[in-house]
Image (tube, rainbow, N blue to C red; front, side, top):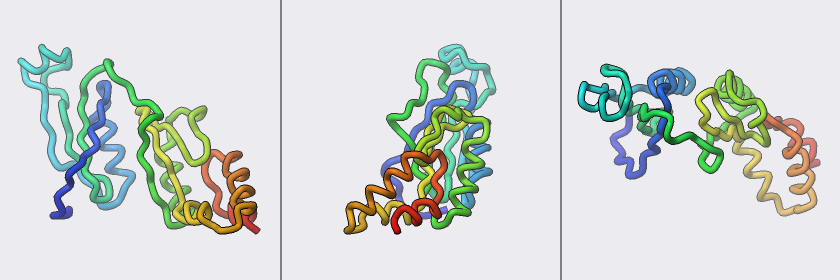
Length: 165
């Protein structure tokens, strides 16, 4: 979608869910598409233990950002040490992305705008206004806002604004 050279591309390892996950992510984000796919042939299927003809890799774009998904098997799992941040301009955007990405995910992994989706990938659904609030010169107000945020799963901008007053 962009002719800009992307030097760094996130590479995501899935356990037999890469095709389903890439189709799901592309459906959630506008300006997104699957760029290309490769499939396991006889030799690579035998080496990996994956079924012949199944998806091996998918190059895909989410809102213009390129990713690669690999169906590599159960050896590696996602964890919270790496997450993808979805910057939002409004509460409506926060609600939309939270509702879509959290659907079928781990409810126990939801805190302060963080969630884990149904594939185990961690996301932060963050309103940019909240990030700006952290830079407010009145540190007491920032403390109240932070306290309010710590009690949330999905970020509620109206409650953060209220805490800043």
